[in-house]
Image 1 (cartoon, chains in turn orange, brown):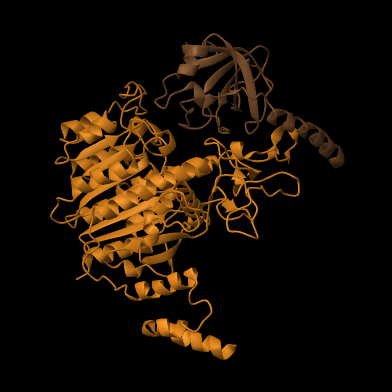
Image 2 (cartoon, chains in turn red, orange; image 1 turned 180 degrees about the horizontal axis):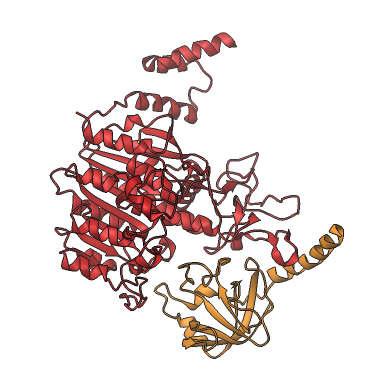
Length: 495
Length: 139
């Protein structure tokens, strides 16, 4: 037994010996066996790309850890007619993979400001701060100048790269802000949030300054309210938040920056000029609810077309910002539908660029308190009830498994959040309500959770980093999150 | 004491199955709106009629009121208490027959009242609603 195992291992080390080495095994004709065997040759043929990267695209799905990505994989697979597990998302075809340790300097469970800063500056920092190092105490404006670190917009524009930023969240929100801003607090999105005496401009003002100076060439997302005053109504009838009388959209226009605010104006944008797209007063809509706004893939295409003409290449940071929000809501349907919109953007970015000169990195900033129950049979709808395994077949039996309380349960749940089964009005005692498949697969269903919290929380567990293109092979093993920046920088500066 | 608390809680949970068995004809909040947040044909056809809508009671804006907001998903965070938190676009303002007895935000309820469409500013709270149920009861 031991001898034959050694023999098999020996056969596997040589790809040329594979065919011969396997012919004698009873499983040699098994489809699983031959498919995995064929993959050996495919993986062995992957060569390190040591070209200099002209372009770098980083796609970050906020809150899309390994577990959340798994849910999206099963959802998209099931929507396309397979059982889900075997489905392959676009980034899952990338040749290189690492795990990212996402903690902030002072937080086992990270927040997006600290994680965004790690990826866009190369240093880890505290939770809640943007573009500054860990010496700054959150909220203290007076420390910003001394604690500032150079961010991706500053560094890459300094290398003659055009710079683009996309987010389905507000452009002033933590992850996109970490590309271009320095702020003592992620919440300083407009001047009304600044503490008295704070001399550091608010985040929206910093974006407009970065665009006016030519550091950022295109920025597409939500957050219009932080660019206009309380007295000003945007095109969709909602007023702004600013109290300093500035209309940053008008200022951008006066500086020669095109402003677009819905899908029609975006489609007609003059991409030869810098473009500011603000498609919502706050965050853009979830993909499930989207109307009148461009999709993440459409914004990705728009940005690449705007940036690709730059002789020195470009840096583009793309965030699917609302996978995180749907997780915070405990609403898996919008998690996976925004997850699919993210994968569409990845596919579009890959389609429009060349692996020879463009490094593409796909990752998340952190995971959530999402978890998956067992033991469900193959093909069990990922947002629905856990159906039993069929010992005589492959697909589930269609019979929901029952917990010890006699009730069915969903595949996915959350450790905490608004889906809590505990009730404040009865001294926080709980009982799970009855649950049907129709309820569980409803688009507005909130998965059951244990610990009562108004908003479900992030978690500190690792997230994946997928890479292709120049120097993507540097992505392997388990690495600190700020290492991602260094891979991008190395790829751009390699000789 | 603990045992008593538990028994109280256990008896209270008996109402959960009753809620889950609620009227099958109840309308979902999203059925009142089109995707662009204009009123749906269904909403227009039911204007002025007594209808039943499923949803969740957002934490009330003030105590001893006869007003609350129905949301399609549990909304634990009070948008009036949090900086910049905002109501979702698709909510339903509820004006009740009697003083509101608070139901936890995470418990699905059904509310029956007369459907009113069009902008209305509540004199007491300043809350502006586009669609309401008046003379409402809920369970």
